[in-house]
Amino acid sequence: MAEKVNTRGCVFSLLYSVGSFGLACASLSTLNPSDRITVQKGALLISLGFVYFIALTEFLNKLLLRTSIGHNFVKRYRLRVSDVLDITNKLVSAVQAAFSCIAGLFVCRWSCPRNFLHASHFMSESYAWFAASYFFYDLWSMYKIYAAEAAIKIKSKLGLQANPIADNNNVGNNGTANRGGPLKVDETAIRGQLQALDDIPSVEQGTLSFVGPSKMGIPSFAKYLAAHPLMVFHHLFIGSYGLVVISYLRGGLGDCVFSFMYMMELSTPFVSFRSILSVMGLKQSKAYVINGLLMLVTFFWCRVFLMPYVCYYYSQVVNKPFLEAVWNLPWGCKVSILALFLPQLYWFRLMVRGAMKVFFPSKTSRRGKNASSCANDASANGETIKASQSKDSEVRSLM
Image (cartoon, rainbow, N blue to C red; front, side):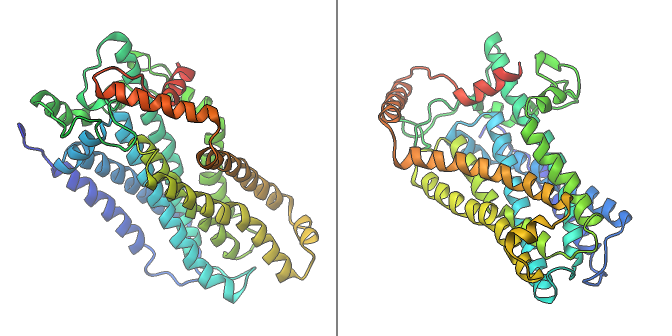
């Protein structure tokens, strides 16, 4: 390799991530199971949460863009900077979901056998504080992905795009280069990959902005949020309202119900891996299909079936018919249940429609696959393929 890759920053980011998580765990070591989390301790947990998720993202970005392992991965799948940011975002999302499930399972095994309505464990509140930071961090992380994609599009229009990792259009549906054998990358491409980390949009570079348009005309963070109201509502509702309910507005109730809510995240890693496989160009692979089936099953079990089951469980505890028990809940509880449950039905409907298209394709979709195959053949022969239409449409909608 023409230049030696510096991995010191990668190691430091990993240490910051592991250290912040270790400090968060250490701050809870002296608590008794039924203790509550004070505002001071909660502020510490949410601060350490920000450090953890930001440092973990930086570590994964540097791992992909500043190490030989990352270079091989990027070269094989011809990833752009925005693709790398998207992959790291989804990996961090999967990590947060795993933590949520572990916390939920722990609290469930502690609280539910003791008293469904009143038993509590400090893990429920403590993770609500720690995870709240993730949902605010994630909004900014997704904006960075969008900004990187918008920058690529703008540079392409201006004829300035010369980033060697930005070309993933010659990758076949199986995720490898088409008919070309081993990929050949010259020194210019290697230098481009070594500097790719500097191409990540940032406020310091002027490529990210909170209110007004940033450098090159990339829309601001405020405009990005305004164009994605459902996503913003979901993150703010879970991150802020969920924290307030679990910590202060539960009315003396225990943690058993909240533990089930934590375990709703079980499907998130499969949703994340589905997106990662798509970015890598593996939509036609067996791994994509298997992951999609697991995503569908876990999403139905933990997001569609689980909430009515918890309501039924509650009706059995209070010894009332199901509908009567639910109707007699406080209005705040009923509104919260609907706000959580109705989006899950909408997303599950989209997943089922997508699964039907995969296993029972129409004639039109078959013709689309044939056209895609022809496009890949053209790519193998050196012809140009247009960038992802889904990504382009998102960029156009905000510009």
